[in-house]
Image (cartoon, rainbow, N blue to C red; front, side):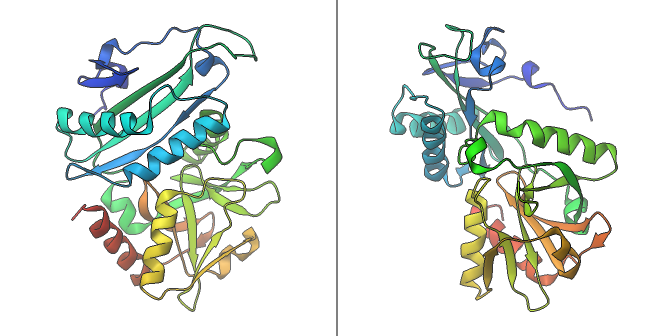
Length: 292
């Protein structure tokens, strides 16, 4: 069934402290957020009407805005309250929440000191990111030609729209070539993450290896999974990981708000087992978020 375009959907969007009809939430085409990517955002999940890690995501939204020199014109508590009200009013059982902050249309140019800072929060039904059969087998990754830029070349600690341009390019090419997603390397040629998810590898000793997040986001789901693994006495090793090591690992999975815990079946020609350790972590994660 074809998905309804997002601009044709119904419901309400919280837009600059007002609830407006979904299709009336409009921004002028001359907007600094669109032309210069001065926009930050978050992605949250709703499980059985409960928002997972709302405070952590709201903290990161405010931090991202600060990094991009944007002062959110609403308080932390106002954003929390608005998000909770949207979930309640829209009667979303299992869905996705997208708060975002952007510069408006008052100035057009690299300098945008006097633009209005706008805030909106949208929510929609979204039970799962990858279908169940794909998650059971494990997704297929290629390796992108695009690399994460060095720390002094991007506001990498923010969840900023502009940082996702190379993710879109990478994922589009991966899908054209028959893969599900793309593995991205950092500026040193080490493994970084997938296009919108962190990555973990399992070795022959049932220890988990994951890249140090020093040029990409240290995901909220990533932190949650690390805590889960430690509670099960699974050793976590955060380190630089070379692509040459991929063939030595026995298992692999990605983590993210949308992806949750998704097994990886292969990275190019290297194949992995969807092992019991990954299945157990996934099951525990689903219990923690209230999915089961």
